[in-house]
Each structure stands twice: as structure tokens, then as C-alpha cells.
Length: 380
Picture 1 (cartoon, rainbow, N blue to C red):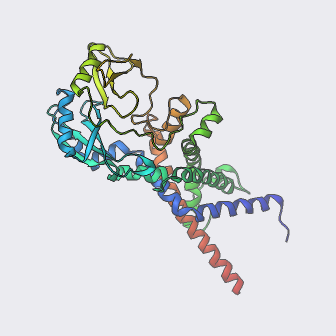
Picture 2 (picture 1 turned 45 degrees about the vertical axis):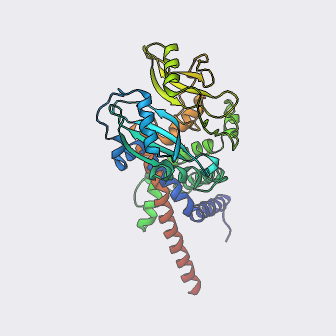
Picture 3 (picture 1 turned 180 degrees about the vertical axis):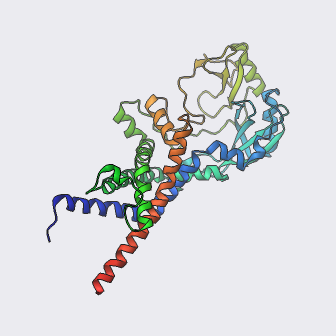
């Protein structure tokens, strides 16, 4: 019996959809579920580690040096202070970050030890090597599948696979002999698995496709920036994480005083200690007294004198997230993780993150049942 070209094409799409879904289910499910978890990163962090946020008051009334001293006691020789972040919002703790000596972590990144400090009293609330926490392990799973080196690129290609699976699934869902509205009904077939697969697949295939494409953009930043005409992100070398100087010539209090003297009335937001290089300098971000953009002041460690302050050029995430300074990259990052996109979108992408698990399991059951029927027909 001959089949029409449309029927043959449908068969091709079915095979592609099937083998992408069944063949990559083992990696696509943890990738997507971890993404759904990370949509609620802040709320989960506060729920899982409530002791870090048990502050006694909202005001950071202690000098920065007091927070540095508290962090040094918590480090107990295990780490060297590299950064102090004062609260972004009322009720947040002060966070001190230290670099752990010894072997590096994934991608050549230094291992870091975090200390959460009570703003009014400089009392240590909690401390831990950050890479060992549930949230950070989930970040690493979603960003690289815990595969060192090539994990990020693997995730990017899985994003393409997920997009193709979404597109072919929408093609296969489309009713062949009935109207579009009838295709929205629950009972498309006799099997509950079949109906669940078609219903979940239709309503979430578009958000899933959007998440896939934005994930590809993030995974391949050089190519993505070139395609949209955005400035190319810097190519980061494995040795980009310079270690802190062993002994600074200018003390922390003196560096802070120099930065504040150059910006009267400002308040410290973030302090970074000097790192080894040609001209080690303290980098201190200040919030101006009258509001507006933060400014960064560099204080040369050798002389204790400031370099010219410069306005903050972007709103990229703290810590150098891959969103980058250009608007397209920031928008892609926001769409992908739900940051600043509103509660409705965050709920939608959470459901889209869970969808591959539902679609994978229902698709696998449908495929196994189909094979069983084919074997039974063959024996008959």
C-alpha cells in the first residue's frame, strides 16, 4: 500500500520525535526539572537555609572591617577573604566570600567559602563551601550536567534537541481530520497516557521551545552574540581567576575610607580585595547618597590612592552572570530563568520544566505499548 507524501512526512516526524524523546529522556529530564527548581532559587534558598537569613535587624550598622573580622574567624584559615557584599534589600544578611586554597573547582573556577553575617551585630549566622549546597549543585546540573569542560556545550545541543522535539510534537498533535478546536479536547484516544501526552504537549510546547532557544543562546554566547549583532563577550581564559594578594599594603579600613572620601555621603555596597597582577587594587562599589547608579572606586593597594570612579555600565547579575551587558542577552537570561518577568511567566516556565518528565514517561509507555501490539500482530 502506498502512502501520500504528507503521510510519509508525518512518519518521519514521528520517528524524529520518538527517538529524541526516548533516546535523550535520561538527560533531558534532569536538565529540565533542575531548571524548574531554579526558577524559585531565592525562595528555596531561604526555605532550605533559614539560619542564613535569621538577621536581628535590617540596618548594616557595623563598619565593613567588623564584617571582615567576623568572616576571618569563620574561615579559620580555610579561605582568604575576596569579597564582602552588604545587603541589597532590608532584612538581607551581609555575605563574605573567601577563596579556598588548593585544587580548583569546575571549569578552573576557585572553590569559595561563604559566610553569612548579621548586619547589626556582625555575628556569624552560617558558613559553608558554597559549591556543596543543594542550590549550587542544581545550578551546575542545569548549566553543565556536572560534566567538566564540555558540559555547557552538551547542554546547548540538548537545547536544540528539545526545540526540535517541541516543533515535531506540535506537528504531530495537529488534528488531521478534525478542526483545531476539536483537537483541544481531552479524549483524543482510548489511552489515558495518550491523552495526557497530547494535552500537556500542546499547552506547554511553545514555552518549552522558548526555554530551549534561550538556553541555546546562553550556552553558545560567542555565536549567539554574533547572530544578534551584540558585542562579543570576552573569551575567558582558564587563568582568569587571579588569587588575592598574600599581604595587602593598604588595609581594608584605609581603602574604604579613601573610597568614601572621594564620594562623600555614599555607602559601601560591595568590596573586593586586591588580586595579584600589575597594579593590585581594592574595588569598592558605592551607592551614592542621592540614589542613582552605583559607582565603582578602585583604590591602588600600593599607594592607597583612588583611581577615577566610573558609573556602572550595566545591570548584569552580581558575580558576572552570562547575561552580559547588552539588552538582548539580559532579556534572554530573564526569559530563561524568569527573573523580573512576573509571577505568571514563572509559573508557566516551571510547568514547562516539569513537562519533559511527563512527556518522556507517557511517550515511553505509548512506545512500549505500540511495540507490544506490533509483536502481537506479527505472531497472529
